[in-house]
Length: 466
Image (cartoon, rainbow, N blue to C red; front, side, top):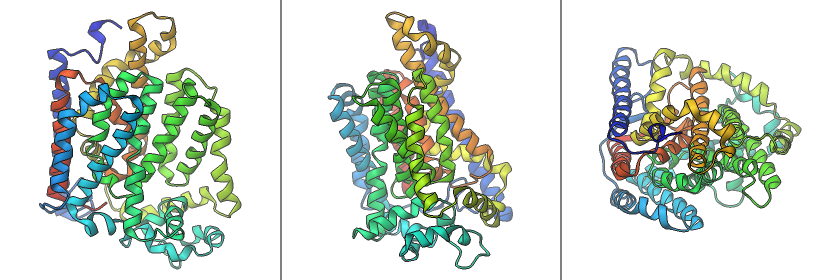
């Protein structure tokens, strides 16, 4: 790849096109807000308070405001330099801790009870049904009998809408003495924030360490943190992120025991499918990793690991396929049957703009520019000397991001993700953030500022439902 095609090279033309991509993304959000408010005023069919987000207009400050401002300023000022210089293990630990600082501070803008302790205890959420899992095998055998709205003691929306591993996570916390919304929120934030480290591990394994370090500040300061703290989808995001990270380590054999990494990836992939039906689409991202690494070697061990969780749940009496069939019916019994596909099929993407931020869409422009040469570069990369190895790293990153983007598009077109995708698509949006590694050095602080301003504005002007 020559200098004219290098998606990381900083040129004035490239910078202007990055700004144009971010502006186009902003226009999409503006259109979704304008059209959405008109539809909601006309017939209320969107079933959200502040289209396209599941939120309500509520300008406010809170105890987390000073901390959020401090974290944002610190990451903008020092993040790029520190990410480039600190030892690798320190970067991974620092990214996790800083992600937690950012996520906790944003959550606490809404206060402790409103922002953390009560998020997971609403009438739609998992903690409302803990007492119905006293006999877990019996509950699993009878789980599908309570999915439809007309069934006796039907499950609340989120329990019906997910396989039981999601609820069992919080049942497990309750059993070990960590019951209640505060512990559940703490779990989701603490585990969810490890996703930033998982993405860094993946980028380093597939591409190179330099690209991983370039992405680190953006992974930390993502607007997505608003919905990681505190929703169960933040926890799901971490599980999927480590699934892909372990697969990348196994595929590139950049870990001491690649077979163990492949098996671990499979175990987490199986768990993923029993946390959320829609996250089965992460098979697409996994295939992108294998394509980028030019290998199918981990597949047998991944499949072996992936069979464990389904086997356990099947033996306990839970039928995944039957439950999914009933879920689709339940989905259209509720708001899913009312919300118009014609609006949400594009407004969902506006939600993703808000979650991922303008810097991500500037990076995605560079991904698109590099994509025509990505597969040929990966295929023949090992035969190219010198600078071509860097090009291969960029192209491997491009394939990874395109895999996540494809999975997101499939989810969108399915019609099973109408609204609330700001949290539902967190696992996919996290991988889109990897595109920020392609942004040139000259404007990185400006892009980080844009990310922070967006997150702070959303969190202080709106009260998000999740």
